[in-house]
Image 1 (cartoon, rainbow, N blue to C red):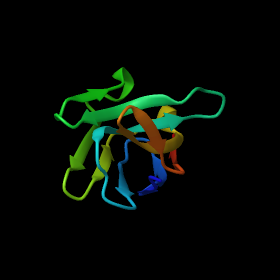
Image 2: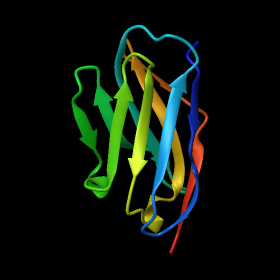
Image 3: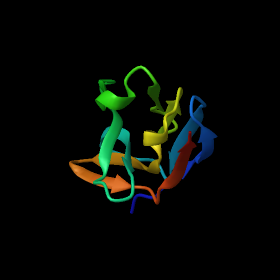
Length: 115
C-alpha cells in the first residue's frame, strides 16, 4: 500500500506564496510520474503539475509561470512551489504518484487564497 503525506497547505492572500510537500511512507519502486492535482468545490479534480521519471514537466495552463514542481528521486518527495497565487487557486490539493500505470493519491491539503 502506498501512503502519501502532504504538508504545507493553508491560507494566503492573493499574490502570496505557499509551498506544498509530499512524501511517501516507504521506498517506491516503479514510479513513472509524480504530481499534484486539485479539486475545488463543484469542480472535477484537475492535474496541476506533473513530473515524469525522465524529468518531463507539465503544468495546467492556468498556473504556468506561477507554480513550480520539483522532485527528489532519492527521497521520493515532490514539492509544489506556488507563487503569485490567485483566489481561483483555492482548492484541495492532492499529491499523486503513478506506479506501473496505477494512480495513488494522498489525503489532500486545503489551500485557500483570499482576495
